[in-house]
Length: 218
Image 1: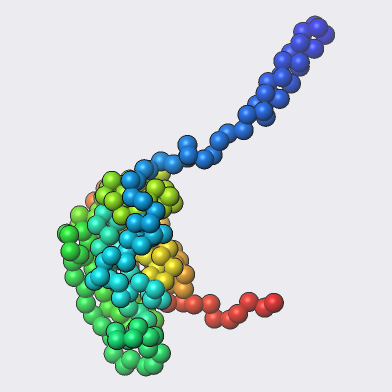
Image 2: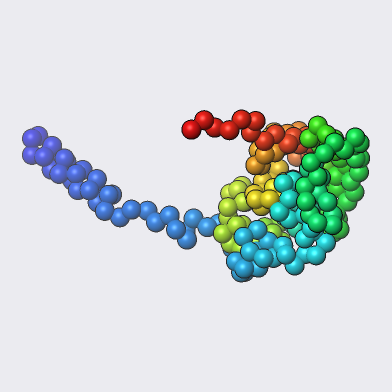
């Protein structure tokens, strides 16, 4: 019996030691999605977005935009107003609100929003339309492999093809079925799904501009 226990313990120790010899490689094997888009042409970490003359004006602004990952069509939400001529932030009382929206160029999503400049928020309805489903192959035509794997979850069935992007930092978050809100820099986005689990066509969104009120004490 003692001889059996000795042999058993010896084998167990060898197995445990062997498990610690070869660590798991967490490099390329962890990448789920592949893209042929080069880093320099990526719309987030490269210069791809600079080729879009229509939206070039908005990049770098302290604002949020709705964005389709299927078409990379952009709809800026100008809670912070900027001068169209010199690009400077307008830091003064507006005295009016803006109500507008419309569909994206390629039939992706549509949004109808009320923007309250002086109180720093926007609210409205996002119609998902063709962007109800996310197509990773379409997203790969705009994003490099690194950005694609950073943004897309493993289970893409839980997210939609449209999200919100911070135009200043280029931080992007997709709207997801199980997430009712998230932050993007100085903005917070509340999103409430309208419909059943398998038939969600709209999202009720509320976007607040809420920068940190007080500096952290040193």
